[in-house]
Length: 179
Image 1 (cartoon, rainbow, N blue to C red):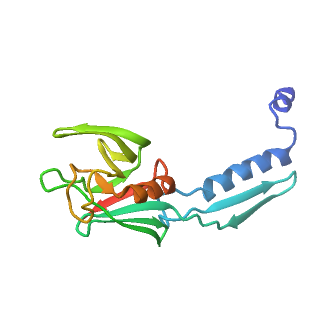
Image 2 (image 1 turned 45 degrees about the vertical axis):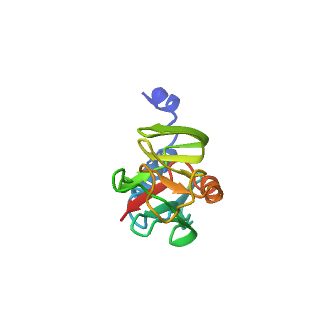
Image 3 (image 1 turned 90 degrees about the vertical axis):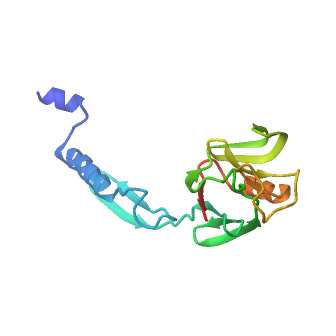
């Protein structure tokens, strides 16, 4: 029996206790990313040597990027935590083809993309970021009516502003759409 324990990596009671203590510390230091401040992350560092375990709380705040689309104001705001970094006028969906309301994530990005639907077929739509089904934030070179709802449900931006936002945001960025 003793040979089996040695071959399994448990060579002394000290090593065994260190392993158990490390597992307990890890279990109790874990917290769900959905708890606490939604715009920051916290790291806990644990170092282990042969005779002791040291746990130190290293608070490293990482401001999460997220996009707010206010359909009543026809504005898009880009945030890093609570800090506003971009404010753009948009064209959201018309009354007959509204922009969906809710919390979404950017699920794909295309430098240019062809967009087709009932009543439109637009090639080379620039800086397209899909956030829900066929709905996207993108540049619009075919109109200059930003601040007015004229789209088929997407969020239109001037091309240069769409370019900045495209480079700033990544796949997975939260998009909050409200009236």
